[in-house]
Image (tube, rainbow, N blue to C red):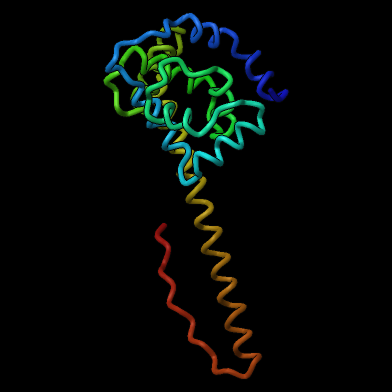
Length: 189
């Protein structure tokens, strides 16, 4: 395994112990649907082969067929090394993946992984004495992202405005007829 994964594993010994202490046997019908849905969503447009190759590069041996089982939710006790590698590839906190697996094992009927994860994090934060629930923290994160997107949108509009001015000057310099400027909407204060 690569040094990065070994370091991440060392940081999460308590979670690894929690996963390994859980019984591997399960009821025949129980599946980790929410966990599988999370993995499918995080994979996005990338192929399972690409993810498997990235895991191999990180030193984690997980083939495509096993990844299919993970995404289907049929693996009751996912390998901790695989979870570390998937967290690294999908850029999500390892603790969130482990929390999701544990919460999904406790509630096998859950379909929405984001709701299940938020509920589990709320329970953990309440147990730890934190006053701010995970759902409120998530709302604050989303509001921050929206503000960033709005600022980026303003920058893009300014850049396109400058690009339009340059294009009009180019047309004039090349001997073409001046292009009428589009009417701009007035900004509301």
